[in-house]
Image 1: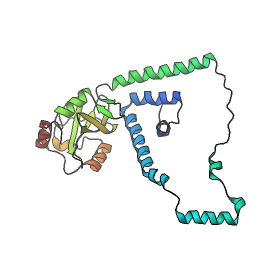
Image 2: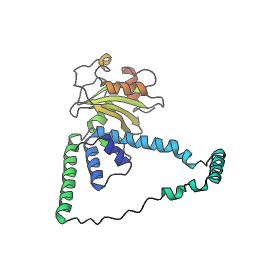
Image 3: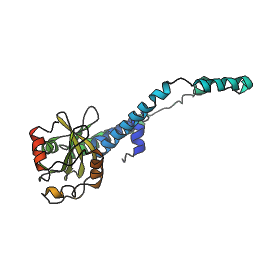
Length: 248
């Protein structure tokens, strides 16, 4: 089942039922790119809520209150009590009778989704995996490549550019050809966290540092441009960062 942004937003806002939540969670477990999109919606919701939290707590300005009170005195019958308007109208609870076959169908659908999600997730095993905090963490071969390989090294997980962000973190672009995933992973403590992922371009055979950027997906390069501080690391810079275990 295709999960679009509308459904991801509904999931983040807690508007889906149990079946819908199960479908989203199975799809996210199977698709790291979808997991990144879900995390972006979570972050956006958090930022919007934080931006307007103070406004919601502010008292009504005195000038507006005075104007409202003056209008109420002129036409008291036209005053609307907000508390009354905010009360939801009573809704009669529908009497829904669900037969045993209907419940069996729902259970079967959930089981198929869980099994399919598990099987598909095995295809991405060793590349990226969601953590308890919702981050996508590099695993297996990708994590080893990020820790040990220099840019343009050959292997199932190939690295393009290495750079530092404004807050001093080391980040690296990567491409996993078998899974056709490309993205940016940044070092946070002992882990490499995927900051963005996208569909990988067709693999190219090059071992030249000067060609590292040209073999990188355009979406990844655009993200690098918004994150990088200074110039990308050269070979000597990568070797020095590797010796420090990619810690600032």
